[in-house]
Length: 287
Length: 287
Image (cartoon, rainbow over all chains, first blue to last red; front, side, top):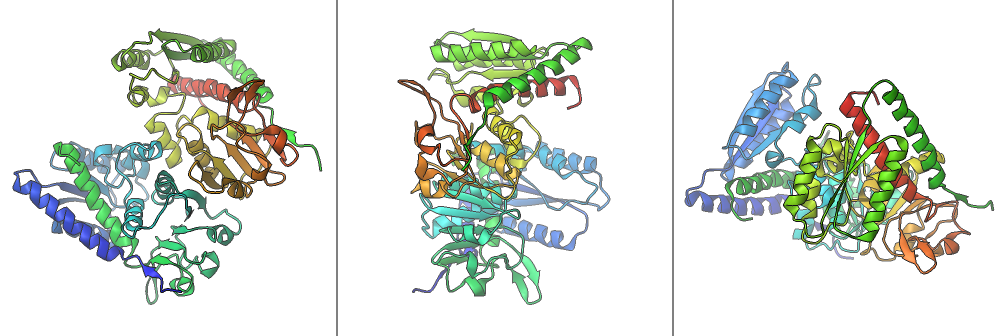
């Protein structure tokens, strides 16, 4: 048996960022404005602050202008909505990202619902989820979009194949299931209430794990030769852990998107790509 | 082995219509206006004319005021949009139904997108599909909602069970898959590009067939004791046919929602129920 293939999201994301940077440089040279990405951070969660800093830096590196709004921990829903409205109206802003989680006193649904769908670069509004379900063009959530791009880059066939998605979140599980169906895969969604999930997972040619449980998936879950996408990310004693126990599945998988270095970098890339898409639509540039 | 159970949508829908009629009579007695349902029919397709007549009659029987707009076959998209706008603005109208299919020159997506989400009693707008995907409250497409109500009325457990949905349409397959997932079932969606669909179908405790192919499903598709919901409806030489070959599956199923008399009557019931829900929201009445 040949050695499994590592799906290198780190490298693919770097290549794609290079392409985006070149495209942005080209339109800038034609006199167009820079794409603008607004990032809203509420409160002083240190992990959120790091995520925001990384996203801003990634944007800046490819020529997207990051703008941030940092609100105090004690802000009200109304305070956040005012900032969202301001960015909604600002013609220099193409994408608006609200860093999650928000402090508990803030109504997250209300805030997300306020983001203009054409600036909703996280793809989290009801309008963009509805477009995805209806198969219409919109802005697609970043992690699911990144997973599909990674599979495509490695020429992994989807049509007619069995895919199993572990997890049914609005952010990852459901959108990735819908995208896989649109690409003609036969999709099963399993979750915390599924009895004997490993039996179902073993039917999967493509297994996407977004369960949020460290090392949930072991060799019992894997059909020999399966393509496994690990979406989990957890801080362990010796570094980052995924939802997949890499050591235990390694001898069975055909390909693996690892943690770290798989889906994580793709998610940030797709945030930039969605901002670029929103920008072109705002500027009337062809896709 | 015991005789399979017929899931009698005809009878359940009649009971529910009686309950709706009583609820509407109660609010009318308190001085509230009647709920209003607008039905838009474009062109002269005889089957569509019959559907519209049946829906109007069903509404009228329970105290919903039907209003119709009949437009000529040669109408433009703009003509239809004008009528939609009129009903959108009319405070006596709670629900708007656009009878499908529209003539070929009319942009169906554009027309559907124009219906105000709070009057979208077919649950077909992007907003209502997005709410369903996000697990938020909205108006749910009628056939999927009717299927869930039928399963519930017969106390068919869903949590932790395997469900297979045949078909991935925006109208039936995808919404019913999402609803089953929300009720803790483990759901697989199979479709025209699925190899060996009968093997997967045989894993189903609950099998929902919305494939649009007469008598597609035979005994090979059925796990003994499975609950089978037939959503297909086709005109055969000797009456109506479903997607399920009833004679061939009968000895294996635990329960069957037949054609006719199963999902069909439930779909019309849910149209009325959605109109009643929209009305209560418009009038600020508790749910």
